[in-house]
Amino acid sequence: MEKTTLFDKIWDAHVVKSVPAGPDVFFIDKHFIHEVTSPVAFLNLEKRGIGVKNPSRTVATPDHNVPTVDQDKTIKDKLSRMQVERLRENCAKHGIELHDLGSAHHGIVHVIGPELGITQPGMTIVCGDSHTSTHGAFGAIAFGIGTSEVEMVLATQCIMQSKAKKMKISIDGVAGKGVTSKDLILYVIAQISAAGATGYFVEYAGSAIRSLSMEARMTVCNMSIEMGARGGLIAPDETTFEYLKGKDYAPKGEDWDKAVAYWKTLKTDEGAVFDKEYHFDAADIEPMITYGTNPGMGIKVKGNIPTTEGMEGSNKTSYLKSLAYMGFEPGEAIKGKKVDFVFVGSCTNGRIEDIRSVAEYVKGHKKADNITAWIVPGSREVEKMAHEEGLVKILEEAGFELRQPGCSACLAMNDDKIPSGKYAVSTSNRNFEGRQGPGARTMLASPLTVAAVAIAGVICDPREVFQN
Image (cartoon, rainbow, N blue to C red):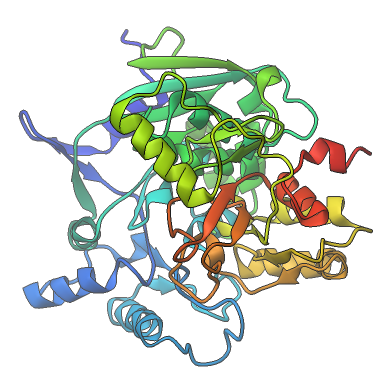
């Protein structure tokens, strides 16, 4: 009997038809949409005189360019307001479930899907957003699609897609003090580069991965795209089942028992072959931070920015261009660099565990005077829990500003922009030029490192700031 991977099992079960020497017609279980990539797709459906094939399989929420203050008021930015209004109109017209601004379950699409239990093992999930890979933490095939593909899924509940190659990344051992899931994935990306998994779907495995909570697993899978992967996934286990049990959209009663029985089959067979494998030791990983303009340009916070030794031609030119944008020099230490902003939030690290960890470490401390500190919950549910658990009071006493749910300062599509030339240490997923605003300089790190930087006012090792 052929040994197959988890990816193979889910993929093959969703192929409607294979096109000879071409892509597969691939069935999609759940389609998430938001205000940015869906309006044109709906407009094209209207022009073609066709509707949405299966509205019950689509879930919507506005998140990318919504404001994170005064959400009960009219959106000031005209384009953002129009996009949100179109989303409302399209959802009402086609009978699509919408978690709108102000509703109990509004939030970032990749936060509300899991917390509602919409995301489940064995599913195929797409969204017009690259970080759809987040949902792979549940043992699902989840990936981002373009606007024309959003239209295709709305019209047919299928997509034309070629099967990706398979990569396995194993991290074994026990992570050291101060090392989080964000550090694990930043380390991996730094090791294999921002293009190292191009063309692959990645399965994460190993004891260090299995020891992670669901929220931490989502952080890892979220950033799969940042090393070029089509997506990433982790085999479901008891941690997965415990997280999903009792959630609004999770199966109930006998259906739950049947679902879990099926979910337990979703694992890679012993001896199954991957196209490429990497193995890492968790003991080698320390708190990480990026210094350049792609997520692969990462180092240990106590380390030095790499020199240009061994670099030639265009590689050296682009490297120096990146450092010039950041205002850094080859070979210098990153520790001690002054910072202006810190941001905790996004679909990478805007969940309740992230906010809890920051509150735990900043309790009794005050942020540095030079720091503007924003903390943005990934959903209304996260915001509610933060208030109920007293986290908001702790954070505000430490000088953090808690804003309302949304993508916020992860990307410059809303009002939460970092000013030109300013440095931000961010828990988001991308540090491209201008990602957080024109001229903004972004360094990616874990919520724990962000908390330490907020207190110290400079890049620092969280293990030294929070020694107890």
